[in-house]
Length: 377
Picture 1: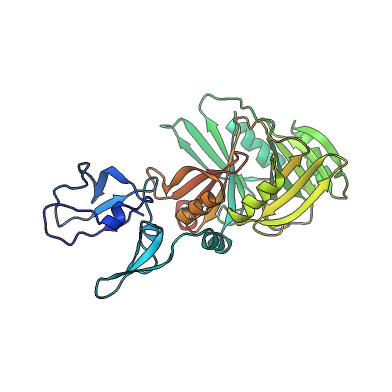
Picture 2: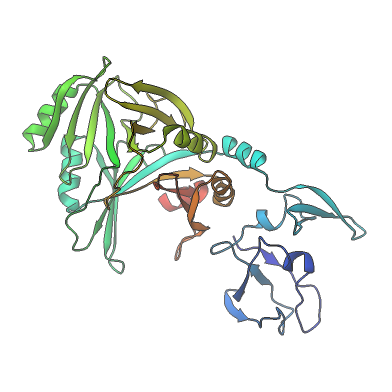
């Protein structure tokens, strides 16, 4: 939301308070918003003013949230040195505690209501892919939206409603029928009750099986690997019935400990388990927001000696729900992540998001929980 600064003076010019004007956290835009109309002011931050209107002064990306301009109490303001100043009834200002520290940002991350919403990737033939996922993998087409002005179509598929399940978001860009998947993306995981039966169905529908059913290397779980029409790999894992059959997204990383630390601190994920396989020269770490048998997880894979991968242009990102995209962006910055889209509402709709890159360049998008629910409605 845009923070509104009420103007109480009846004078004809606007003067910005020094403590706000000096604060490095804020930037003055050459275009301000007054009651949804453009209002321009000169470089001296002074202009004529209509007292009946209120002026939105600050932007973070597209807007700065009220929580970052004011503290939880209306009487607290942000000082240039990063601490807060609290106004007493007499109007005097007194310094209080630091507003943003790594400790309180990371503590907030732990308590944020986060969950993995969907994984986004590009396909060359949307109808063909939908047919494969529904007939071979048992997914349901949840919704579809066409954006002709932007020349793309989305399809959401999964094993249950989007508000309670992790789903795939397929993107078809008009006229593009092939993508480079690269070497960094690994696979998606699907939990099934009978791997052999699922493989037989895939074969009957003309699908490609790249690993026949059998126990995983160094373990007992029965698995198989198949490919969808675009070449994205799916690992079939034999499990008891689960509320979250779409259970894994596997990505390769160049420094596993660095990635684990980043996803724990910046994303608030738990390290669910870690397994080293020296015989096959790789280590995996399962990261997520709950047990593997009930939640979708991120499987990070480190191959001995490999520090960089080609990411191609097919796989896009994971979307994660959050209660506050602004605080999320701050925590990501503190943990060394790169913000690629400053927090704020999407053009044309009110859904607030922020986007970032992890240390390996994998993209994630955080979506406001309340806005996401409204979008589904």
